[in-house]
Amino acid sequence: MSESTHSHHNELLNKTRESMPKLDTMFELADFFKVFSDSTRIRIMSALFQGELSVCCIAEILNMEQSTISHQLRILRRENLVKVRKDGKQSYYSLADEHIRLIFEMGLEHIGE
Amino acid sequence: MSESTHSHHNELLNKTRESMPKLDTMFELADFFKVFSDSTRIRIMSALFQGELSVCCIAEILNMEQSTISHQLRILRRENLVKVRKDGKQSYYSLADEHIRLIFEMGLEHIGE
DNA sequence: TGAACATATGAACAATCATTCATATGTTGT
DNA sequence: ACAACATATGAATGATTGTTCATATGTTCA
Image (cartoon, rainbow over the protein chains, first blue to last red):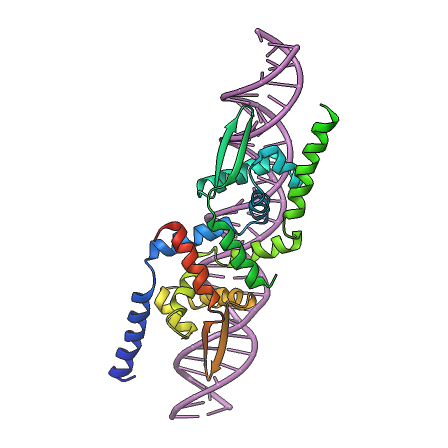
């Protein structure tokens, strides 16, 4: 292989590497989308578009265990996608971000709904 | 508990259920975002923003096994996010959709980059 | 204070998934 | 036809993750 071929090859390689986001950023991005990659979390967020809901209400709407919902809400909280308002015994969850609706719409558009 | 309390409760429950996307749609949506939830796939797509690339070139850019890249490209192909152009020994992959850039930008915006 | 209820959480388990290794398929140039 | 190369893919493995059960924490009301 000639030297010029090598250098062209390395040029593309370096140019592409430089155009890419930082490695850490790409890991964060994957983690962010990971939150949307589970159907239970998608269903919880879908329910919350309607307005704030308590944990047991979400569990009833989805027809799933309260424990399951709590665990998934913890993940949504950790990623700042929902916020909590405590009132007596209940915890009322709501979407933290109008952003989420856009991300949903974008996904729905791609799967053609 | 009074009957009116019950009916208010069921009203919210039904209203919310009706406002949600179809169950199948929510499963599809989760599957769609699942593709973006892995850092290797994110890195592959990031590289492809630059233009089409062969499999071994992607492997070199990411410094990963050719086999790993092939497996992940298969998933991206299955979900219609990349397309292939075969030329001799090589397979050149490129992004199937300008959509992907928007989804990336939306994610980057949320993680604050 | 005690009973009933709402929520959170740790441990265990099953299922999913990314990676690697080995190898098959297909192409180019000699 | 053969050697060298590029890509694809099945099987095995290790790691991650969603769900369930049991239980802890905290609140309300009698």
